[in-house]
Image (cartoon, rainbow, N blue to C red; front, top):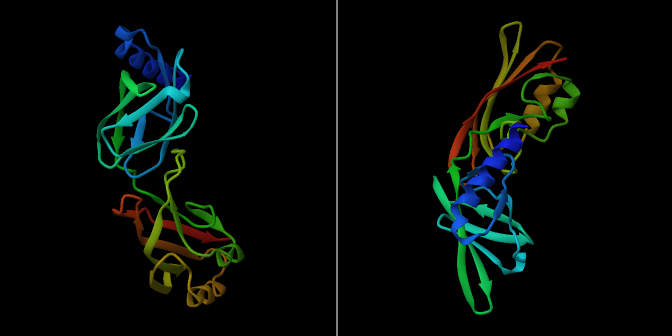
Length: 215
């Protein structure tokens, strides 16, 4: 119900903006009306009574491309309340029929992920089977953003005593680390920290550490 209300209110505000031209524009922007810098933000836009092939969308922030009928991808390049302009093309002429605004914000800091886990317990064999450490958006944000882990540190502890520590470049588990994983025992703790991640807009950010307990 909450999502329905957000979309309804957003659509209503757009219709009011173009009411003087008697045009109804409907926008579906899941999962919210926020776009992220450097990301491909997908949404749909329809104009009542006008064929989609005659509709052109443009923006004052970054790029906006038409993927297929009524579906678009918005890729902003800076934080702002960004304007989306709706234009109708008629032959060689075009006319503006409306506009609306999208809030653009920086991409949230990533969270590290190993074997599909953000923490908790893992079997030693499952840990050894992983290629390395990844990063993603917090799971409650359902947008597709690609991150790359540039470096990380790994610490293994048994009964509060240090087993080994490594500082690594890249995201992969080296052969040395895999050999160390073979020595792990039940209830050992493996902590991944200092995880530096490159964001799509070229910024870098530290991901939250991940602590795994060997089953």
